[in-house]
Length: 252
Ligand code: 13P
Image (cartoon, rainbow, N blue to C red; front, side):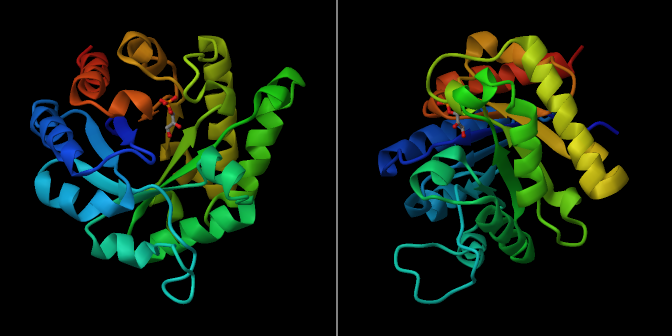
């Protein structure tokens, strides 16, 4: 059975308590789209409150530390995310790879910590513009997957991969349909190489400037199992338009 499309909002470092109204509005409307799985990843400070404010959508972290606890000032562990009510966490986002110098090895350890804490994982990969221009995009992403996919038993069952080309994040630029299709096909082949037949069912999300007006086209591409949405997830109105686009594709 095909998995439901998965639409996840990554709020990044945005959101104070005033945003709880958006979370509530997203949750109420998501209840009208039972054929779409919806999640939001608020900043860690809001996780508890968002958990309390919503009923049907998933709630997640944006990152976690690889250790359960200890002297790591400013960090949040997967165990803590779980305790705060998270269902999943994002790991390996390109902003963390860039600004916090996270390597594939770090990302893999974080993903494994998240799985052992009982969280589902959204693992992000994606090439820079220079890497794409050099013709290396698929090789770069394949290497990221080889280096950062969790090795935990049964990992594939709780894993989604988000393909987010770095040059498409927050820029309003998106790759062509053909390029997204080729990359998702290549990611699928890598996942099957890593996980065997379980890799065939891992959802592969697209992320990078997904908006209401391009969502239908992107979500219709083979092997695009959903979207990881940044800017357009910050208001219920723009996020729900994307959820609605996913629902109408499923209705065909
Ligand atoms: P934008 O949708 O703002 O381009 O961000 C994408 C992203 O990084 C989601 O994780």
